[in-house]
Length: 476
Ligand SMILES: [Zn+2]
Image (cartoon, rainbow, N blue to C red; front, side):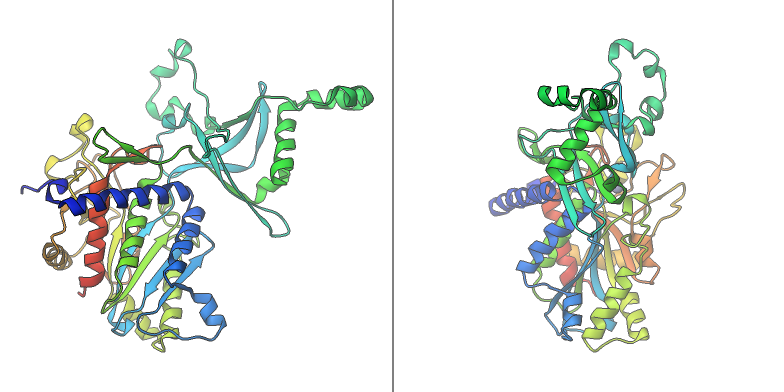
């Protein structure tokens, strides 16, 4: 089957839209380097568009009706949005689902130590990473520190040009003979991913020094660099060492999303898995002003570690929220809720691996996504004989083909890579548990899960077009 390159299908007007859309997308990436930052950015955007918080409506004893826009947030890390359609919810929704967590290094709960004149933050990596990719690159620190009294200190250091950055060291090549003999998975061990955050000892004023000579001088010399860091944390952020216990700090690549290539056809940025699908789903949701079925956009956390926890897809958050929405519409019953979920259609939107000519033997060229090939559908994911996959129904695929062909959406079908080379999963199988039609779809990414991932501007734009067509047209 021959497929066109998406770029070649665009009019002048569309080519301009592609660039504008990419610009907005890159801003979204820069503003949301953690799931909390993403949720903040999204809430700010949708409130301007007239979305109201579900809990507020409940508190005010309000009601919902056709055309209303409502959202619910779970622990500041997951969000569900609904635009109420004409038909009763019982007849099903059209759901766009994606995840907003990305692979990174999390700071441990007792992280701060000094060794060999450096102050470090100890980390534990999150999600699937090639550990050797995270050394010697500029890193930023994002997250929250929650004090015992409940106040939250938000932190984002390393993104502004005059901010300091942090880094993880690697052994110099001159002494790396033994290291380079190791397997790539062992070259940099997980426990060695410790962040260097300082090298200057705490300096005591000369005058002070003399006054406090006996009691202070010895103390200052011991772990003086760590002491210096603690003094800065205290002065700038009101943080004590114990406060790391109730902190969520994420170490991510420092720097903004960039256009890539002389032709500026691509985007190179951190965290495009899966914020590229989250952003295009969000934009499609805002674009579709009217629909027969209720439109829903669900952006969840913890996909990269198995969709676990209160903010992951396995949580009852989504089901409970749908129940609340139906209740405010005067349509709730246990049976109506079950019917709503079963009758829904979903695009489980996650990134797909793009064909990489440098590693051609890892892919089946006929069944892989190409950068610039348009929106991607994965009928199934999983590994070793589709294990762990949601395998979308052929009838559903036929329905989607009809919708997408009618709207001239460029799409391609793909598998992650060659059979038996590995695999992966998404949130698709969890929604499929309700008996709804679910398929994996999204955007192709080159060097997925690396600190800097690449996408095609055309694919990002085309996928948004696809989501719009889906929200308007799906009704199986
Ligand atoms: Zn991923």
